[in-house]
Amino acid sequence: MQETPDDPFLHYAIALEYLKLSDYDQALLIFEQLTKSNPTYVGTYYHLGKLYEQLQLPNDALNIYQKGIDIAQQLSDRHSLQELRGAQEMLLDELDD
Image (tube, rainbow, N blue to C red; front, side, top):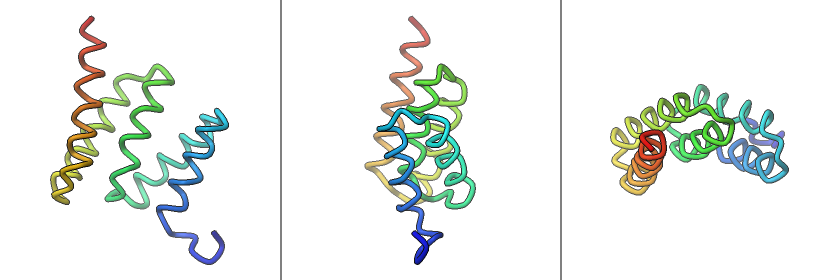
């Protein structure tokens, strides 16, 4: 990491490892930093949204999904767009129940 400290994938991968270890605070910190330092790294938005859901922060999750959707549309990233829309719709359905 010292050789490429600004590589978003490395930070993303580290955050995922923190998730596996159930260290949600560290994962949250890294994911949130990534959305600021590398806002076009679209994969971050899905996992950050899911983490917000796990932390019982549905409004934060919906907001981050929408930001990711907007960016995926700008980048013409259909796969991420579908994934984020699906996550957003599932959460909205859960909140409606």
